[in-house]
Length: 217
Ligand SMILES: CC(C)(COP(=O)(O)OP(=O)(O)OC[C@H]1O[C@@H](n2cnc3c(N)ncnc32)[C@H](O)[C@@H]1OP(=O)(O)O)[C@@H](O)C(=O)NCCC(=O)NCCS
Image 1 (cartoon, helix red, strand yellow):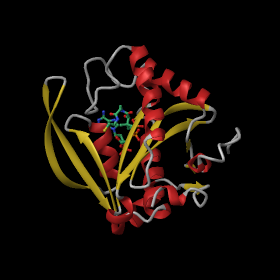
Image 2: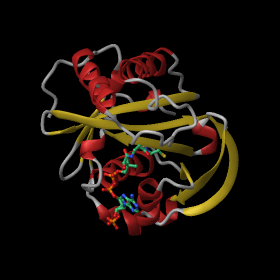
Image 3: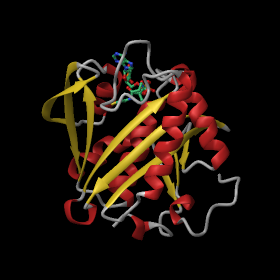
Image 4: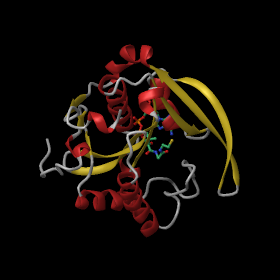
């Protein structure tokens, strides 16, 4: 349940997704600061790189600033034809991570992509599965997406396990350079027809979408 007044002139701030354990919504300024602190405390083990832009691999103050700036950039750059929804994830009142859903030319392609991260101490408790369920419910049930993709590095067993649970299929491998290393990035895809049979993994409630639907398509 929203506790703070939302910004009437930024309709996406009314959007709220609820799973059995989590709430996902745009963070207020102070909540964004708390999210940055979660990143500062650690998202990845030392030496591990799971993102094409290694925003989570630098020193703690840099990681925190990357989170804050990324949210400001995504809001400032928002366009119906090219949007990035960065939702803070709450367990009770505690912010624990971030779920992304983004798209380019969504009204035409119906294609969207997801990304997600949790503070290290919140990983491995099933929250990632609920976060992905929330993003997929928003994409398929809320926004009528045709397909949703996810890209994970070959070594990222947790992220790829989440995709497997939702029945994603392989959609190609790109070899990219990250920090001077060659890494295989596996894209996986779930189509609308495959969603109903996998939506039971975690029930999701969507609130506040009608007020912001035109921001997405
Ligand atoms: C990826 C991430 C969001 C997944 O969230 P999570 O809460 O840890 O995942 P869950 O607890 O929901 O686990 C999902 C599945 O992955 C499996 N899994 C988790 N960690 C695993 C590992 N290291 N190796 C193999 N399987 C793993 C779990 O067993 C679970 O499957 P199950 O329910 O069938 O047992 C989280 O681990 C994370 O933030 N990692 C660091 C950032 C990152 O890599 N982001 C994604 C970039 S593509």
